[in-house]
Amino acid sequence: METLNFRFENGTRRVTPHAELVGVVSSGNLEVLIETAALNGGCEVEVKTAAVGFAAIWRAVIADFNLRWSLADVRISINDVGATPAVVSLRLDQAVESMMGARA
Image 1 (cartoon, rainbow, N blue to C red):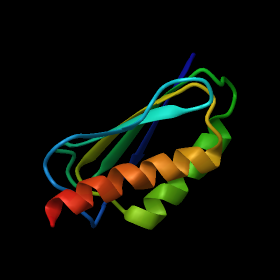
Image 2: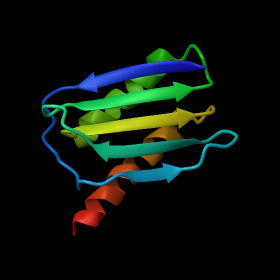
Image 3: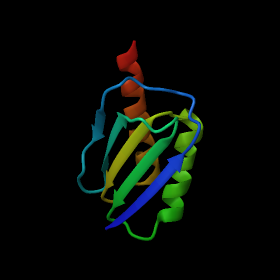
Image 4: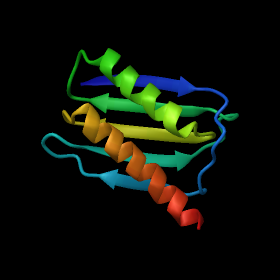
């Protein structure tokens, strides 16, 4: 098991003040928990993954996600058991879109 932590500063987009859980931890998938937190405009992402040695790929996927959403005051927890980068991106987007939809 490997734990990776990422932090992005100066986010510009805020989400509704509640938590959202998407995905299911099972073979080849992951779950994403996204919640608001007082992070001075930052976005923190913690990844717990069974696929050890893929930090560079995770960094690229999470950085791409940050470029798309630029979230502020958000904490994201990811529990992974070997999801592909495409599935990771899909679940992250799904979590944010669920929170944004709750705002309407």
